Amino acid sequence: MRPPVQDQTMPRLALLAAVAGLLLATPAAARITDREQSCADWLKSGAHRKSEYPADVAEKIRAFCAANPKMKAIDAEMTMTGD
Image (cartoon, rainbow, N blue to C red):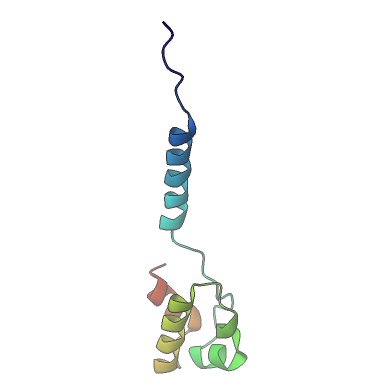
């Protein structure tokens, strides 16, 4: 009698899920590239409308910048994203 054939689909899916989880868990690189730009200038430039972050995160960064216009935009981004 032959042993049943093992299905390799689940181990592959588990590996794929683990790799995806690691990629999501690592901090994202900062999306604001001008390190000297203030929050006020960042908001005026309209760059906040082109955010690569999910809408809820982008809104948190925008709100934080609106409340702290003299802060550097990249610092506000790092504060809100935990990077």
